[in-house]
Length: 608
Image (cartoon, rainbow, N blue to C red; front, side, top):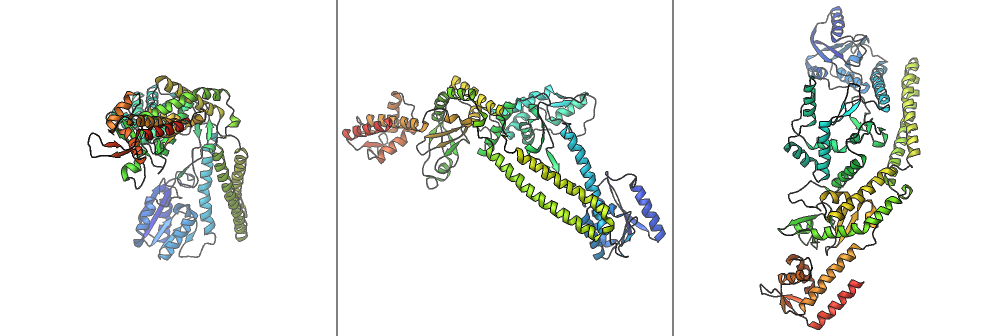
């Protein structure tokens, strides 16, 4: 059975390939002249020859057992991928089938074509050159700051081709930033928007199109999802910044690859901002912190310090224990697996953490103000590790590109020796590749020459410090903390076995106060121990409830649970022992003089 194959791509030269019907006509006339009858047609209209998963072509391969001869106008109609075309022709021969390419005067049952490899290679270069020309045009337009695609949700382009803010959508964008900074994660935020009945971007655009009596043929998303929210949160277009050349396709019909941010074209103050730059940078820091701590949004009990507290022994996150009148955190490993996996609970109460942070920031406040006034960008060694990383990547890419350039030059010489009659064509093709590689090496050299410069602008660092000062002032004024404050001020908090804290602040705030937080906390615990020891001098038996009530009367913030670790410590010191009495579970087993001696020693520890 003889069949015909026809293909037309949108990027083909329309003079030579006017239509699918013209190709069929050429094949029919050839078949009639040779005495063949075309029993079946396979066609691909509007599909690039570089792709070999074309519907018509794939079906023809599936039907190969029924086919004797395939007739096509020329080799480029079969495809434009050099290696795959040569492989296909070999497979056709091995299968005992025949392929005829009319304009190339090729018949697989006839003599071998010595320049077949050059033809397939030339056809492939046609596609690649066309792709390069298109990319070059797009690249030049991107360098000028020309919009290639539409604007994101929140903006529109007016009749004068100017970017304007869509006021209705602006409110949604601002709400998303506000909810996210308030503790919502991407998924929870999407659920909240759906619950509030807020239209999705595509629903909003459809509504606008209807108002303007235009058709809207895109898919409509009826509900918000976390991807939509994430795209809005991470897009600095909302700060008035235009970025072009964000993706690039290295191979013809290959996958789009993301371009590094420093290699993109950036146009500051390109359009009116919806979100200020400092607000945007705050949110990006918040996002990175949540990724690092595996944060999953607000939980049932608004747990302020979830994902920030870390056990000093097993380096595991702390888990919250919610009680009616008290909230505290314990090591998650200890809580789930027991002492064999982590020896201590590392119990710390939420009120204790809040008090410690407020005490700390009060002492840091004035020094932070001085830091802003005396800020010197040359003293900040930020971004160095990042610059070193990029430098290493650029050096590796340069070495790779130089090796590729050597291969191309060697291949050019080899091909010209084998096909001297094709010297001009081969020279032109290889020269374009050589120029491309040479230009890339030059670009990399330029990038390496500026990589030593500071990548983080002074105004961004100053902005972060000023924001920190505003947050601290707000915390001091209200004498409380919310999740937003914590995420903007703190990196992590390490809790030791005694519940003492080591707080790591952002912006170097922790280094601004001459204050030893851990020593302060240990002093408080020693003071509690001294007071309990003093109370025991008048008792023979006692209980946690009894002691906590007496401690509260003396002004200590304690309860039955928080007293227990101290009682355990006193048992280790052979001051108390357990009894079988329900209301008096602890018995004093030492004398008054020994207790007084212990008080004295503990007081000395406080002074130290």
